[in-house]
Length: 175
Image 1 (cartoon, rainbow, N blue to C red):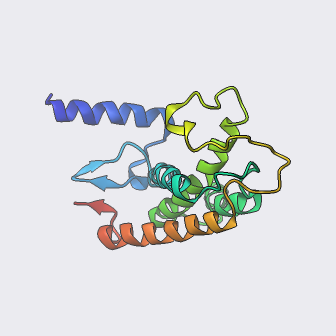
Image 2: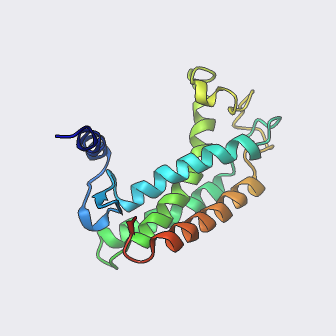
């Protein structure tokens, strides 16, 4: 086994811990299936982009939680699509899975970072230390990640999905 195959096998093992890895729901890059399905790929991309937008769009002086309504609105498509397919109302496709995953990941990032700032993890995770609210307060009215920031996240989600689709096309086989 070559070192490249070893790396691919390692990531496939890690992916198998968090994902079903069904081949028909997985994107292909260079002839190899990604270690996670299209929805999980979208969620991980969304988490990464959400983190980057937190760096630039959060209100550094605010202490209130992210807008719960918009967080739920961005998460809802994933739940609707997942449960709709689970209960046989429709068959989802990788386009929808990827898009709902991106939205979900982007909405989850500010929520998770804020939630961690309410626990003993505040200031203990180097990647999050500088972006967590200084004085998180669930009762505060000034949202730490406001409607404008969440709206920007939604726009980035749509543009990111359109960019991936323009590169990938309909077969979801990259390169």
